[in-house]
Every structure is written in C-alpha cells, then in structure tokens.
Amino acid sequence: MAASTHTVTNQVPPLVGYDVFSSDRALTEGVERHSAPALVDETRAELTALGRIAGSAEAQEWGALANENPPRLRTHDRYGNRIDEVDFHPAWHQLLGRAVSAGLTDAWGRPGGHLRRAAGFLVWTQAEAGNGCPVSMTHAAVPALRTDPELAAEWEPRLTSHRYEPGLRPAAEKAGALFGMGMTEKQGGSDVRANTTSARPLDADGEYLLTGHKWFCSAPMCDGFLVLAQAPGGLTCFLVPRVLADGTRNVFLVQRLKDKLGNRSNASSEVEFDGTWARRVGEEGRGVRTIIEMVAATRLDCVVGSAALMRQSVAQAVHHTTYRSAFGGELIDKPLMRNVLADLALESEAATTLALRLAAAYDSVQNDDAGADQERAFLRLAVPAAKYWVTKRCTPVAAEALECLGGNGYVEESGMPRLLRESPLNSIWEGSGNVQALDVLRALQREPEAMNAFLREIGKARGADHRLDGAIKALLTELADLTGIEARARRLVERMALVLQGSLLVRWAPSEVADAFCASRLGGDWGTAFGTLPHTLDLASVVDRARPVG
Image (cartoon, rainbow, N blue to C red):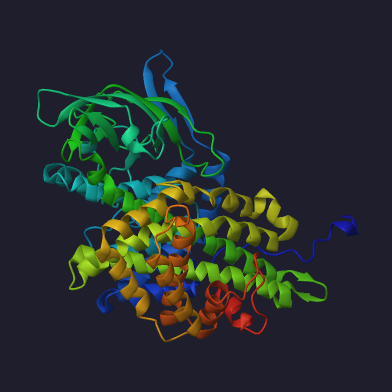
C-alpha cells in the first residue's frame, strides 16, 4: 500500500499534443498578414501540419534524446584509416529529416518562400533548436552560390530538395544535400579578413587546394561547405565538397568537436585543411562580398530562432501558471505573476512580428516587386538591428520564464534548462552584438538609402501613439549627432530596434499589446526587470493572447 505522502497533487500536465503554429496568435496573424491571398490556405495547412508534429510527444522525445546523446567524433576506423565521421543519435536524423521535408531549406524558388520558411523555422525550432544550424546554412548558401551560375545549377536543386539523405557519398548521387560553413579561425574570430588559410590555384580554372585550420566549422557531416581562404588575389570564397565526384573523401580532418554550453545535439567542430580540393565561388579577392548575402540570411535566422525560443519559453510559463495553484488560487490569476507573464509575452510578440516582417521583405526582394529596392534598403539596416536586439533579449526572457516554473523549471525534465542554455547562441553566431552594432553604423554612414527606407517604415505608424512619436523624435535627434558614435552604437541600435518593433505593433497588434509595449519600452514606464509594467494596463488580455492552446 502506497504511503499517503506519495499522492501527487498540484503538478502541471506537460504541454504536449498541441499545434505549435495554430496556438500562436502573433505567428498565425503575421503569416496571414504577409501572405499573398492565393497562398494563405496552402501556407496555413502546411504550417499547421508542422505545428502538430512539433507539439507532439514524439517530437519532444526526439529533442530530449538528441540532446542527452550528443554527437560523437570518430577520426579513424578500426584499421587506422582516417574517416573523420560524426555519429548522431537516431533522434537527430528524425528531427533534421522532418525539417528538410517541411521545406525549411527551400525558400528561394517558391512563392512566398521566405515567409513560409521563416514561420516553419520558428515552429520547428521550438521542438529542438540544434538541427536549425545545418538547415539555416543550407538555406543561406543559395545566394552565395548564385554568384556562379554553373555552381548554382549543380547545387541549388540539391539544397532546396525536400529529401534528407544522411551519409557521406558524392553529392551527385543524393536526392538532397546539406551545407555547412567554415569562416572563423582561431586568430581572427569575426575578423575574417585576418584569416590565414591559403588557397593555391590548380591548372583547371576555378580549382584550388586549401591549407589551414578553421576554429569553427558547423555541422561537419554536411555534403559541402562554404569557406573563406586567402587566394593570390585576396580573401576568396570557396566550395569544399565533403566527398569528391569520384567517391573519394576530400581532405577534411575533424580535429575535435566543441563542448558547448547549449546546442548540444548539433556538432560544431575544428577542421584542418591539408591539400583540400575546393572550387572558387565568385571572384578572387571578393570573398566577403560573395558571402555577404549568406551572412544576412543566417542573421535573419538568428532573429527567427531567438523569437522561437522566446515563444516556447513564454508558452511553457503561461501553461505552467495556468495549472499551478498557490496562495489560494491559480498562479496565472495573481496580479504580480500576470504582470511578469504579460511582460514576457510582449517581448515574444514583438520579436515574432519583427521576424515575419523581415521575411516578407525578403520575398518582396526575391520577387522583384514594385517596392523591392525599398525593401532591400530597409533590410540593410533592419536585419543587423533586429539581430542585435532580439537575440540579446532571448536570454533574459528564457531565464525569467524558467523562474515562473520555480524549482520545477530548474530541473532538466521541464525542458527549461535546455531553452536557457540555447538562448545566448544566436547573439554570438554570425557576429556578436558589437559586430551587429558596427554594421549598422557602416550602413548609416555609407548607404543613406538604407536610413531613408528605415525611417519610411517606422513613419507608417506616426501619429498613432504619442509615446512612439516621442521615441521617433528622440531617435532622429540621436542620429543627427555623430559625436562619439562608435562608443554609443549599442544604445543607438537598441533604440532603432525598439522603435521599429513599436511601430509594427502599433500598426498590427491588438491595442492592449501595442499600448503595453509603447508604455514600457518607449514611454519609460517600466523597471529594470520583467514584471514591472504599469498596473493600469490590460495585462489579462495580453496574457490570454499568449496561451499556447486555442
């Protein structure tokens, strides 16, 4: 007979068996807002199917197993031959296979592709974030490859395929392929112009042999990699296939896998090139220019990925407090907890709304719409500003959401520690905060059309909220004074991102959401921690909107 003390009460059921897409009102409304009318039904059906899988018990188990059983490096086979292979748990292949089959590497060639893919990426990242690394790089490699029509014709159909085929074989024998990248080196980090990996030309046009060490090479079991190396004409972009056309393995020496804070399901490595065959992508000496659109695309994925982590953190916090009782009632009904949840929900919705706006701009540019030049200029400033700010907000949101679960949130079984460990990654990957802030300054100083496009975007909401109008005026004042601009770059970029988010919410979000955001983030009626919103706001409606069921 069980002891009475073992009776379990007041414990929260797991958030499982729900549709991650359809239960996210900010996401569903954003997709409908930005989709072409003829694509709305198809897109909704596609994302609903993915959302149901992402919220299933099976997918949640895949995510847990892939992180509990991280990849293992095998440098040699039993006979002593160098093989440089990474073994993954079967759950990893299930996750990555679902991502590919859902079209998360296929944005560039289908109608509304960037919006649909970004929304899908936001949904699937909530099941498990690590597989997003090869998915993102594969997607982002397409514009770089298009600088060489011959390479694009060969590789783009493989990268945009909805077929996942793991294993090291010649890419020509596979129905689908994945790409990684190797940019940074131990002596340079983000300063890729300091790279020392050398590229020696061969007699055949466009072919080289690479020698050097890459400090971070993500997803080493991919079929190809874009890398930067010093050719005779300067820093140049190259395509390094993992397996050569004749079936032999390229020289791709995996020295070790990184032991990372989070993102543990994904393999990040150090690799050595020693006479490694490569094909030039773009012109010699123009490596950064060739790779820049890939960088922009992966930076957008950092924004989307952080929005996903924030959304899942908020969903877990709202779900827990809905079912957990304390001090005579449900936690969600306690005024102070409601304030915390509403504050977190504002951060999440602002991130999602901004991410989808950027994805829609990519579609406009891709389609060469009437406003494509305007959207291209807008993206030049909005992407690094959003990457700076949204990724910075991810960690405090995840930490506060974890605290909403109390001690339950601090144990691994809740899933919250995994979200917290993952949360800093997107702020570091593809250029940390200072890199993004300095990139914004570069655009301000060299590309006036970018600033004009940015101001036109936020100007669409002028007159709708006096706090937003005041924030825009203050931003213009700050932009007019370039004294000490580098030292205050973070302050400036933060203001730009907040004003942009505020303008989007004023135009599109429910009044209670826009009001709370403008009062706190733009009007200054806010503390320095979450849960310090003005008590006079309609916080109950903000929290109810964030519920992960409905």
